[in-house]
Image 1 (cartoon, helix red, strand yellow):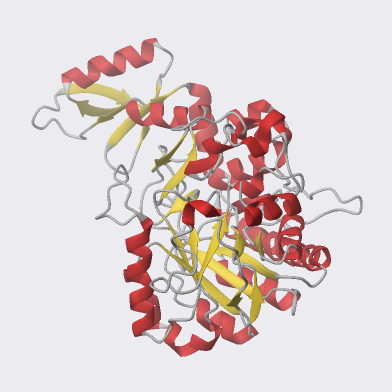
Image 2: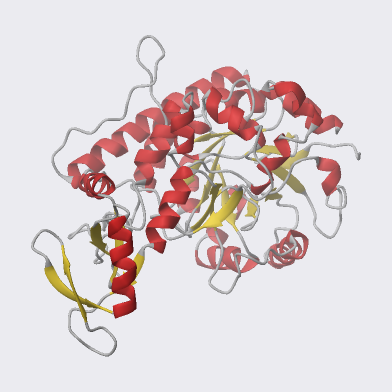
Length: 470
């Protein structure tokens, strides 16, 4: 394998190894600090990060306010306090080595307020902001205010071009790097455009090369591109390393740091990673963000898929083929179905899926009474964790604080499930019944000799193995 040399990133020389940020409480200050201590770039998640009590236990993020707007304020306060705590832990753990980055989702509720609060409360401890899930035009402005470097996450050169022309050219000196997140390989939310087929992955090399050519037009030939998604062993990417066409390249590892001793995920989650097979991770579009996301196919995903499959179109008037009368809800309000769909409905009801819930697309889905109660309770408990949410119709924009659409029962409360799996994943049931984000290469844990006999490395052991090859 080629020697892995340091590159210039964020004004310093670091190993071209970046820890990917992973959602609610999963990339924390401990993993981030150990990754940075190895000479690379550690990342902690600024998305509702954990705070701790006097005994070091995570403080449950419970909400007491009566309204969504008030609960949203509680959520922002939790996120700022947790982000500051994780920044401090990362700094202490790193011993001043490497770089510490905070990962923020632009479509997170209160994202700008949260990152302002974290950077204000942890001055000098955070060296960079990584940000994706949307088009974060104001990222450069925030970075300039706090004099930190910024790292936008994009999935195409076209997206970066739009960001550069609108805003980033004003703060070019603080652009530490551009993260290319492959929309077919990366875990979590993915930036597939409407013109791209989720079932037809494209080779990342020409896409990254197109990004570099565009960056050179902007005078950014020496600014690193960070390849994210599908990176496992670096010898598989040797044609990228020291390639003059691509310029300086770093590699981001999101999935592999999950399976380390310092990783805060539970033992059941770690065991599950060691048993995944190819195809167990796939793209779906159930997320309340509206983005595609990459997750493990477990009972949680299967229930969402089945929920959408038990779906029929309805009309409020008898028109066309919609002539079969059906009563919805406790008052049995009349809607009209296609007769063949009514036959499907009767079959689902016989199986116990007796509750019909309306979607924004003039369809009905059919669930059990217990699931209907859960869906309605989750929608009622919304705390505005996203800037806009399909599941609850929340929007953080005044004055209505609504996206103007009906809540969609085909989706789910993402805050609830990510908090649950982050903090309860010692239990098999929590791993099976919650959203488990993952990169598509996670199936390689089962066949990689490095993890034979259930071996789980420390972060340092993982970084050393990545640097020395198989």
